[in-house]
Length: 181
Image (cartoon, rainbow, N blue to C red):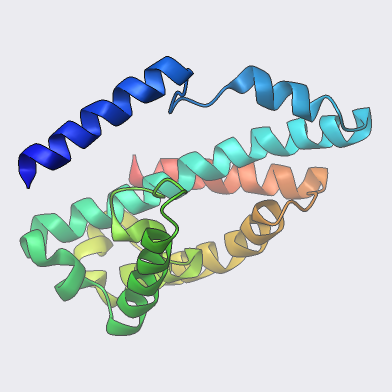
């Protein structure tokens, strides 16, 4: 069985090479498609793209803090012992759904990528004794995730942010960096 699968994979790789199929995205193709839209739409997308970059870095920093902190204290069972059952169930359901969409690449390696943004705050607060040394103030954590979630939703659903929203997001990301180091 292993030899048959291995032979299949090698034939597939060779066929893909011959056909010029590549797993790396063709950014020039995407740029040509983007150029089909109005200048206004492209300028707004570019502006929101810079803000999305902030969000991307922030959200991955939050996931890293959560997973690292829980693993340090709870070991390899951090997901089961550190994340509440309702959050786990929702994330695992989304992960299973993504597995069925075999034509689409995975979101990431950790089940945390399937957790809703406000739930990061819930995980942190439920394990407060582990996060208190880093984050210090539960009220700040609660307010932080509530406030940023509104901006995140607008950005994630291709909405436009006002200049004040962008400034607020920048300040909040810098707050996070000051707190977590």
